[in-house]
Length: 457
Image 1 (cartoon, rainbow, N blue to C red):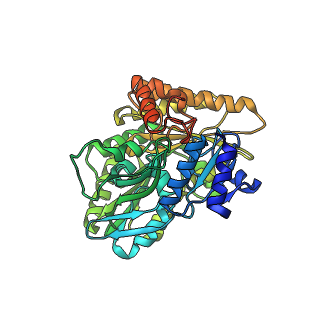
Image 2: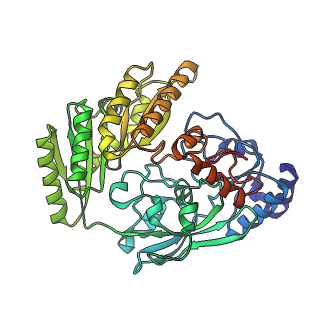
Image 3: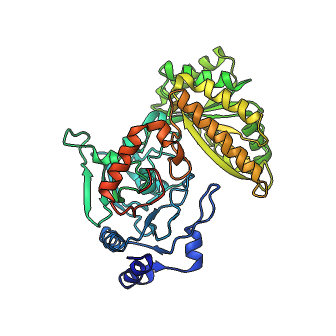
């Protein structure tokens, strides 16, 4: 029972859809974060659920680890084959299988990306709203329970996945959920697999909830003198019942980075960027209500527009923020971390984090999806300065402690992977051990994405 034996059997079955070339292994051994490269022993490209089932039967028989690979955009090392074995690339399982416009749902394969899905949906008047920023694969988004800029209105992947087809560690194929909008039938197996990060089964098909494309969209931007005032405005917006589709925050450092990166002219102050979806009358009324609230809370420069070109200009800061921040420190790369707290503690959490970063030896602009209490720190480090990585990890550790102290979670949307594994006991207590028990039942040999999310076998 060895990895080599499993790969030999799979090579006969998969042919040229199994690769051990150095370039393919290297491409599947990289992440977008600070983790060292960890190439797998081989990469496979399944094309059907039956392919995945046969692959899992073989790998389970021979004890070969299997790590699913979508678009490779995860930030906590989810897709790295840390114990070797097989990287399962879903790039060829990227079809939109069914659209049911009357029921507002679609059935897709896991390798389809959210942008590809929305392009295919344009003629239907529907769209899929979950937007994590990156053009991630929908299977990966479900596996990490992704969310993003539109969560405040449309919810996370957990709210928008109706059902799944999943291949278990031993090759069995199961279906969870239905196309019905609710059910009282047994355990909610769909939500068990959504967010399981490939540790319980391999998603090979998703049934997704769709939404009507808004008749009108307006976007707005405003600035504040300090972070606390901006965050207080977010809290007041949510508590006032103003129906926002997005409400994003960037700090003064991010505004300065965007100005330098794209010749912008934004005030070097904290900003809020807001979007409204609805009828022309609704978006106009909501924009005006927000403008009045911003004035009352000391904001400045409030402007809004429904014209696409104006909305693009208003959102320029958020769209280019990550790359602008990277460019703001030559030769740097980012340790990106996130947390999420109850909205009533949001201002306190942001202020404490900002003060903590200011006292550290590295820069760390803050931005986030403030409407649901989730924010990120982009901690900039140089590879040739080990003390900077240590400082970034220390900052991230204190952010985690802060979130838990305030009744929040160690990760609002990045997931656990390897990066947040050490904090699961602190957040979940005995429930984390129960997660490990579930893993043991469904994957007794521990071959599914080992080294991630749950206590290690």
